[in-house]
Length: 460
Image (cartoon, rainbow, N blue to C red):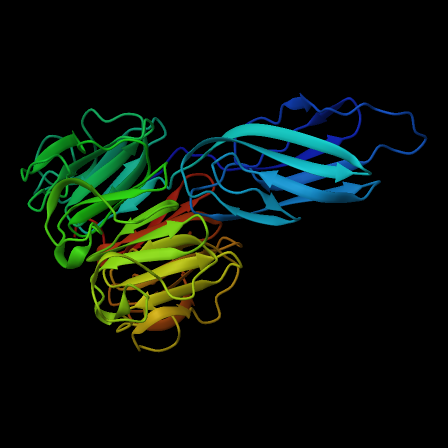
């Protein structure tokens, strides 16, 4: 168990139709400093209308949040929520929002109260999940934007300049300004605040993206990659989503998992063919998927067991649309299955289902998105475990399903589950973020930054 100094709090902000009103905080931030609204107070014998805005003011990335405005003393109409992250404005009240990109944004609300427009703005930042368990090692993103890792270090995947295993976390050499981490089988990648990416560890298939096939025990810059907003390390390849809505992948390219129309490995990033509007990307074991801003999902690579979700068993070296999925807000992918969180708080999965990892109560493979049984109110998703999936509910509880022979589902048994079961591991309550990876290592983050992990240990 590791403790990370991260904060998460909620705020309620009151907007009043007198000279000053406080701004609402849509994305995150700390204080609720007052801002001057373009409202001229008028004399009235009635109490001034009050608009109260509530929502998560410091959210984790890829987590579904609800924002709401309530008004006393008047009728409010025409709410328009502007998020400042490049996503489309949202109308209505309440509204749901997923921040798919780590970063700092200025968000605002415009509402009409008794015919008068009120506007409030606030700047804040979206947080990354601070822990990334992997196949044989685990890394933590620390409060000072550095990284520490522990576990197996055969290929230098701990990033400390050695190949000596470590049972306690060691600092990654010379790496600062990190805003996201992702672990492959035996390598690690980090996204920096300036949009660049660094990787280290095994490099036999070019998965470090530095133009060589030489293992590296310290962070090495991915060649020619900038403007990155999200990264994901798969089995022996990695992918990055860019701010311009495109994506690039590098490393092993069997079955076309790099998405560039070929099956030739690449030790430098190659552009995913024909992909636009991408806000997140996932590199899985032997396929990759991207979430688009319009709520659709595209996948490419190996299609055995239907892991591309397009109703076909045929591999694809370029992106194909996942069938019937139009309202996805978050995405995750594993070795042979993928899942998406929908805007209504439900989850769908597709691909290999031998251990019940699709969660539909069967062990039948699914080549199109299939609803997870009885699961509602979900706010975060993690399908990165090789043969299992976990989801976080809005009440802070965690549910998992699929392979369970190492107690990765956390229900106190080693029985595989084809439908979600509640994680009963001590301390897994009041959870705000989850992370999982291969070998059934699962971690949950509490509001105070405390981590609780279960299943196989990263160094076993």
